[in-house]
Image 1 (cartoon, helix red, strand yellow):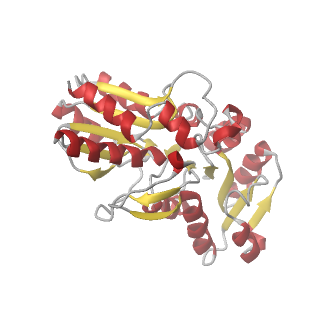
Image 2: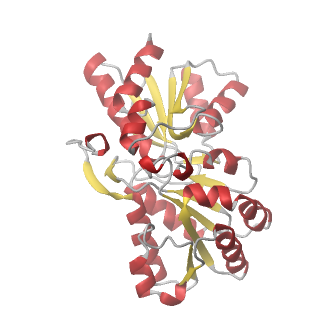
Length: 322
């Protein structure tokens, strides 16, 4: 569908973040035999077929059994393996939630939980295959880092850092090819938002595949109204970059958050909760999926329907700036 195509002459086109994840993991496994991949019948969708062919002793297939996936991964991690548990995000964070809570987080096993085809990537397969709850449920679990990279650079850096991490982490990836959003800001650290576009009239905070439409909306604001809009990739939802939020609060300018998640319990509510408790007075709006079952359509059609698009974010920004 035309709505799903990314066409931006100002940016270079990259690969799908899932593909970058698989390539980066493969390069790490070639030099580190302690890296183990565990999948639940998802090596194909996770782009891990080449990994399995090159490193058959470093991959475990449990079949369509997500609870076993997490339990086995926790056991391997407890024995010193750098374990990546890979499954569609909708199933990993719902069917195996108890195992994530107890076997991974509570037991402090440094499993790297990887949710693929996240958000509404599965499009017309519908609500059963959409992961619009994962930020909310995992934010409520102690001892869990939550990361949703925006582009190929952030994805590669997140995987490299996760491999070294001695703590549970959830990495969330979509499957659509993404543009390279910034070649200048090459800083990446868990818990630190990346400013991809500078501005001082309004700030748009997004993560994952919603950062690109946020970037487009910021560009449109400048071209249409001469408005300078800052765009932040808040790739880490937990821990949140509260220092950056403090700076935004001090400025007092409008803030929009954008996410491929329910408006309940996600990036927007995390930011709003912190800002409100700190006494911030910024005008604020959350763009995401409302509290309803999603309409049927492709990812692009769903994004457009709910305003997770250049035009939708632009319209909301125009309203806040009034």
